[in-house]
Amino acid sequence: MIALALAALVLVQQPQSLERRVAAAPDGVVRFSFAARPGVYGNGRNMISWDCRDGNCRHRQVDGWDSDRDDWESPCDSGPVRIALTKRAGGISDLRAYVGGQWRSTNGTDLGTVGTRDATNYLLSLAREDNSPAAKKAIFPAMLADSVTLWPDLLKIAKDADVSRKVRSSAVFWLGQAAGDAATKGLTDLVDDGGADREVRESAVFALSQRPKDEGVPALIRIAKQNPDPELRRKAIFWLGQSDDPRALSLFEELLTRP
Image (cartoon, rainbow, N blue to C red):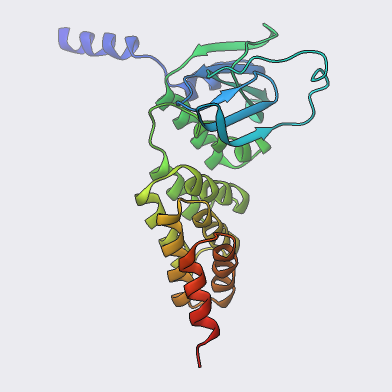
């Protein structure tokens, strides 16, 4: 009896997952925040940059026009990532992501700061649900989280035929942007999968073109030479043509002089 009571006490004391906390919140705006990985910055409003180093950022997303842009200068903060969910009839109908700044309004439910693993688990589960515009927006902020490896989850989403094409293509894009050698292998496997959706496979070719040249160029050359799908070979050749890599020129010479 004592052991059962102690076990019940431990269960009661365990923190609820973010998914359960969101589910328990009333309809309206539900907010939470989590730590951003190094190199992620934002103005707390409409701009998020990532892969930043020494004052230079490789990527930036600007959401619409900031009407106050001419009147004031926003600070550029290194975090946190802030998520505002719109909850209606118990479901999530929209998602907005910010980096830095602070919440303007106290209306709605603020769940505070949550762990990055809990946050990314929730966001990727939202992407898999795929029943609202929020699903298509959920992968991007997950990729901004600190100290979490997401490429295995993204590969599962990219290969899941029950997930919409747009969400799978988003997963492929972020694999190409953020993953390392293992994910690059996964991308080439996805391109070679004749049973996968054509648009998703084409997104995988594009994602390979965004990888560092030592990873992406050899993979694209192999696709251009060996893939049985002529349209995928054409796509790989196109992106090789944008790479300004001497290996691509050698391939073009080989193809053009082939008897």
